[in-house]
Every structure is written in C-alpha cells, then in structure tokens.
Amino acid sequence: MPLVGEMMSWARLEDKINECYETHSECQNEARGCLPKGFRVIDVIRRCLVETNECRFVALSYVWGLNTRSSLLTASCATINGMKKEGGLPPLGMPRTIEDAIRVCVQLGQRYLWADRLCIIQDDGEDKKNQIEAMEEIYSSAQLVLIAAYGDSMDFGIPGVGHLRRAVQHHEDILGFRVTNVIREVEDDPLNLWHTRGWTYQEAVLSRRRLYFTSTRAFFECEQLMCQEDQFNEGNSHNELTSTKLIIPEDNSRFQSFTRHLMHYTSRKLSYRSDAYNALNGILKSLYDGKNAFLYGLPRVDFDRALLWYPDIGKNLITRLETQAAVLPTWSWSSVMSLSDHVRHQATDFYGTLVPWYQIHGPFPPASMEAVNTHLDSNMGDDWQVYMAIACRDGCVENVSFPFPLKTNNFSTVRRMFNTRWKDYYTFCKETILLAIKATEYPQTKDGIIMDGTKPGVIVTRCQTAFLQLAPKSATYSLNIVNSEGRRIGELCGDAAKLREEVTSAGYDKSVKLEFIALSLSGETIRAYSSEELRAKKYFDIDGSSLAKVPIVNVLMVGWEGSFAHRQGLGWIYLIDWVNLHREWKVVMLE
Image (cartoon, rainbow, N blue to C red):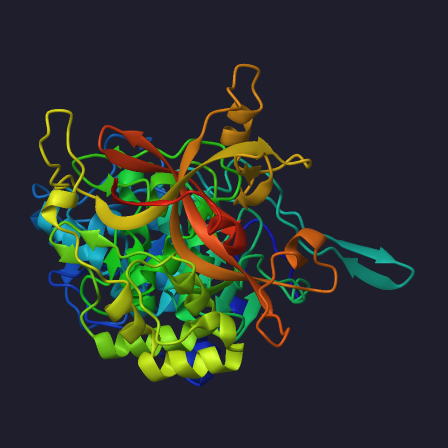
C-alpha cells in the first residue's frame, strides 16, 4: 500500500466513493426541494457555465478569504454571458482552489461542478437571494461535496492536487517489521480556516458525501462510513463527525438538533455579521418546514424555548446590530454571532411559557395549529400540567381562574383536573397566555406619545418583572441573582465574564438593582448529590409527596434605551423565591 505523499493517491478513495454511490441506501436521499431558478454549474470539459437543474454535479466548499489577484474570475452581470461560451472559464484567471476542484472532478469522472463565486451572479441581488435561499437544495442535491479544508483564500489551491503538500508519512523497518506512522493534523495551524468559517458549516451538514482535503491527506465521509486516503489511519474519526450530521441518534427532538447546530455554528466567524441568518438558513429549513418558520433565527413553533439561549463565556455585552442587510436584535442569538462566543441553551425540562409574545401586528403563532399542538405536547417535560398549575396559582400567569383549590389536592388530582379543563398545552396557552395588548398599554415617550414599536426586530410582551441585584459566586464563574436581603435565589447562565468583570470592579455600585423579566417555567432535577439549597426549594402536596424536579423561572435581565428594552443576560430563579418577590405586570418592547 503506497504512503500518503506529496500528491494525491486516489485508489482507495475512488473505490469507497463508488461503493457509496452503488450500495449505500441511506446516502441516496433525494434533495429536500427543487434547485433554484437560474441554477448554473461549471462544465469542466467545455470549461463554461451551463444553466440546468437536471444534471449530476459536485459542489465545492472553500474559504473565500482575500483576493490575491485582481484578475480572478467572478460571475457578474458584465461577465456572465461570456462565461457561458465554451472556453469562457480559462485556467489563467481561475481561482486556484476552483481550478483544482475542476481537476478532481475530471479525476472522478464528474462533469459538472458548482462553486458559488462562478455560479452565482455576485452583483445581481435577486439572483444572489434566490441561490442563497436554496443552499439546502444545492448541497443536499450534490453527488459529492469537495471540502478544501486547508488554505486562507480561494486562490490557495487544494494541497496534493494542484500543488505539493507536506509528506509526513514514512516507513521504518524495525526487527523485521515495517512500521508506518499514522497522520495527525497540526493543531492551531493558521491556515486551517475552513473549520472556523460560518458559511462552510452548513455546507458540510447538508451534504450526503464529503471529500475533505487537508494539508497532509484526504478522506471521504458519508452517512455510513469514513475512509482515509491510506489504510493506516482507518481507526481515526473526523473530530466533527457527529456535529456535521443534520440529525444524530442523541437528538431527542428537532429542537435539540437545532440547539446543537447553533452551538457549533456560533463558534465560527463571518466576514459580515449581517450574514448570520443566511449562512445557517439551509439547516434551519431542513429542520423546520414551512414558510416563515423562523423569526430572526428562532423557530416560531419552539419560540419560548429558543429564547433560552446564552453566550457560553459572555465575553461581550449583547448589543443590537442593524444594517441595510439585516437586523440582529438582542433577543436573538444572531446578536452574538461571529463574536467568538458560542451559544448554548438551558438544558432543563421545559414546562411552559409565562408570557405572550407579539409582533406589532399581532401574535405570531405558526400557520398549522394542529401540527404545533402535536409537536408541543410531545416535547413538554413530564408533569408540565402540575408545574404550570402551581405557577398559575401563585400569580405567575395573568388572569387565570382555576376550578380547584390546589392546596387541598394531591398532584395526581391536580393533573387530572387540569387535563379536564385544558386538553393539551396549546389549548391552555390559547385560553390563558395569548392575551391581547391594547394600544394604550404601549410605553410612552417623555412627550406622552405612545410608542408603536414598528422598529424592525422588536417583539412585545406583557410580563412580570422584578428588580434584583447581582453578586459574584464563590467560584470564579457566573453571577448569583440575589434578593433585597442579599440572599441567593438564582443565577445567570454561562460564565457571564463581561458582566462579572463589571460587578467585581472597584467602582461598581453593589446597591444597583436590575430588572428581570419572567419568561417561562422549567424544572431542575433533584439528584442524590444535589445541594441542600436545591432540596429546600421542593414543592410538596397534601400527602407529603414532592415533585421530582424543582420548578425554576427562566428570567431575562434587561436594560433600557428610551422606551425599548434590550437583553443583557439569561438567568433562572427558584419559583418558590420568585413568587415572594415584589413583582409587577408591564408591557415591554424588546429590541
């Protein structure tokens, strides 16, 4: 078996790719939609663009980087017609990475290649929009995706194809045995940029088959197997194998798939933060079907749970970004995208929302309420009825009258009576949560003018708020939420590094009170090793039975700019403590 050398060794890879084409049923999935109008590919034989949506093609995933040659070919309104003529894509002006991808196609017997720089008209807004919105269809339709995983620009080329790569595999004969080293990628190599770029993430996730090219080797990955260029690295696995699958067995729901992908995606960078939605749009569409399924990057059907995101480190203050291209509101994860701080979600069981959310023109429930109802019920935490009944009894949900005195019943009775009145979670929300907000309730300016909230990216709610303080935890991370007596009643999520820096600074006024909004109800599991603090927050019924989980209120810490609130951090407070606070109902416009 030959070693992995300075140029590509194709034998093993071609065999496995062809085997996948012919025998892997799970890799034969059809595209999830139609290719866009005006779809173009490169004919690698005639060296020109062809407009067609009925051909087998290979797609390229690569880093654009900075142009190193001003003469590099790019599709534009001025050049597109010339590129459609035979020979219209000459090697001289071709970005080296695309040129090398053409060579790979010829080697593998594939005639058509899709590369965004040449197959999307870069200065045609409508064409660009249509093609970007079809990334899901393009990458899922491709027979194979070539991943140029090494290099800092489109003109770098593919190692081992168009230029020599480092030869790091060698034989040594020792005591009659031939010993060969396996290959390890160099850590922290500044040219390993593909894994850091936001646009490239969904290109790998949406594809069925991937052929990676690194600085030292190539390997093939499909839904069923992984094959290295040589036989000696067969035991290795790609370190993003699980993350680059759309759905993995560990995902219990599509929402869990969403949060997993969001964590990986937000750890990457974008040249333009306004691309935050576009560069993830294909994955979002694959997980949640339907027109307008997302509101600023949050799935409408899971909106209340999707709000429970937080930056893992919290190294930056959360700020709103508004450009001509996009709005990144503070309540959306998009506001922290490309800031080197990946997003996580509260992992506690979710029992239900405590507030209605509106856009100015009304509530935003998804179109199919029946589908939403089925989805919500199947993803609610155990005994959500009991937890929500307690929250309603203790005044956390506005204007709810219960047909039973909760204090005199056990939990099983509460659950039965709850189900008698509200057959499912959607019905409960419809009757108790989705309350109208009158125009006169909207905040007013100093001149008494009612704010209409038509600012883009604004959502509105009527919610309970309370003023509390922050205090450093005894450990080095995050912050405690404390009441007026200085007693810990909850904490912020994540490290909250920037906020912790402010709270622990010499000039910080420890008497400052911050406003918190009650969002939803979750449950914290009580385990054998749980703290005494957690055990003390349990709820018991008349028979002395306790709930399996301690209910907590998910809260949003907000600041204000005029009449608009902005998100500062996510936290949680024990329900038993929240109901003992001084709370008030108010209309909040969150930007």
